[in-house]
Amino acid sequence: MIRLRPSTAASTDFTCPQTRSMRLFPLLLIVLFLCQPALAASNERARKEHELKQLIQRIDGLRREMEQRQNSKSAQTRKLRRIEKRIADLAREMRDTRNRIRKQQRKLARLRDQQQALEQRMETHRRQLAEQLRDAYRQGPNEPLRLLFSQQDPSRLQRNLTYYRYLGRQRQRLLDASRADFEQLAAHEQRVLEARQALEQTLERQRRQKARLDRDRSERQRILAELDKELGRKGRKLAQLEENARNLRQLIDSLGRLLERSPAETRPQQKFAKLRGKLSWPVKGRVRKLFGKRKPPSSLRWQGVMIEAPAGNNVRAIARGRVAFADWLRGYGNLIILDHGDGYLSLYGHNEALFKQTGEWVEPGEIIGSIGDSGGRSSPALYFEIRRKGKPLNPARWASSKNWFRSLP
Image (cartoon, rainbow, N blue to C red):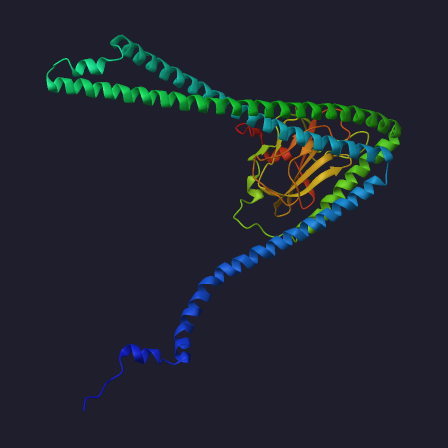
């Protein structure tokens, strides 16, 4: 008797489901092992983003607390803060408008160059077509037919007829190219017109912004005159200087405590302490107030330097860091503070406008503000400090005497 054996395929079909699961289990373990680093990195990134968000919220609470404290002091100070913040907003808008104008001007210049190239190509096609038409006119309309009945050598006749067919095709290509160039030029002229109109609208927006800025600056001068009357007596000016210094010290101390819980940097960064003597100045200008000199009429000392420079010039970050504070502070105007790690801070005061927000990272030489006279100054300048755990350091020992970010736009 012949016995039939079940095939291999048939035996496989009857494999126990539990056995198949046991075979897949090692594969699942390998997949989980490979995915674990990616999951851990994702969780770590989410944790740091949450910590940073909490830090920004705490700093914002500190900013509001400082604002309320300043608003309770003087009506003129409140007016000055309000008008200088409005000037800063307008200055940022005008900066964006200037950038938009430059882009639109470059776009318009490119369109005009392309338009000129199209016109030159059309002129070349026109000349070539005119030459062919003149040749055809001289030969007459029946030249191919005349050649056919001229009893020429057949090979020569064939060459001549091929030549006339080539001329006809070339003439048609020139006509098609001229028609396409004409349509493209018409569309290009429309784009040039639209680009010119957009540029004119942007320029008009800039004129309106400048008019508002001029009005706000006139209002600021009036407020400053009233503030000077309010602080007319020597004792009141002295009290204000001391209070301004106390406000800044309280702000830095509070920031220092908050920044101790700041999420660590996610990428390698050069230690700020190793940059001593190698830093660039945040702006090119003339240093007028030196570190450690007395600040009359008080016995206070300058804890930074005052750098005089033209209004609107760019203020740049001296090193990589995170924005710890960016707002108006009495006595210092539009102030931005960068945290460079290990307790090091750099401060930039009296800006016309600030271009970075709390929590943002900035690179060395990146633009963070523009030179101004906010905080009640009568002339444009930048107040610049470096601190380590709240203690002021002499900026001249950290920045090279003739080193600034000259190579940057």
